[in-house]
Length: 294
Image (cartoon, rainbow, N blue to C red; front, side, top):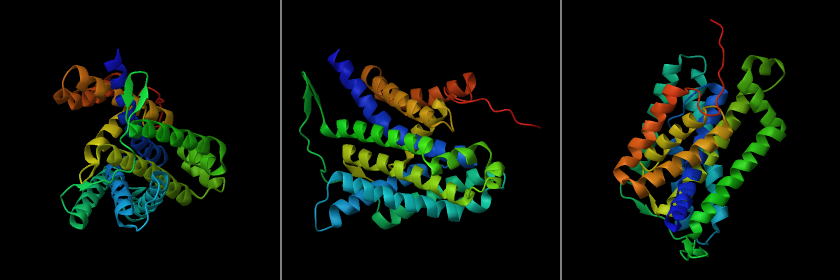
């Protein structure tokens, strides 16, 4: 039982990172129907921002300050990516936007490779390695912090979307872009805001991931990004609660597979879930069937 509890906690830890990145996928898709495959690289850039802040500044900043600065820089990167790569493709065929997203992903990977080199950077110890004991179970502090911070930002995002004027505008654009324009909503501003929020949450996932695993490298966002995409599809692409559910589910499934079956089977089972969901319920667990006029 103790081993099972540890595995579940580890699953929530990994799943919270997947959920943060999955939210970025699902927000962008909900607004402009684009799968932003460069989102994993935004996660990677967030980790590099945190590494640079932690290693180059003359003063030692608290983890939460490093996180907020990294999220702000990543939000700016997200807006720039949208303006340069995607804005002119909003009315283009979806395959054009998809190819552009893959190209942007490869561009950001190679840009990081040129700037930082292929050698992994070691993230400084921003969190004490002393475990916190709950009964006889020792849990690393970074694991607890990752779960708490992730859930906190997810709740704040949900409140922002449900309660604020900008959040309501985002929902309006997602439902009907043309009608939103007629109601006086600045669609360009809302799309930029969506990319900014999604990129900020992706960077948060990257910072927490790099602090937990102590390494930063140019391809670190590739596999977590793909698994976050699986999580978004599993929960229902376009649904923020679905992305949260999918992220935690995929994280727990992956961790239990590594703990009780084999590490070599973990990725196969995760992507097998994607195939199964697409066969049985293509809209995802919390997704909605949308009727389109032909």
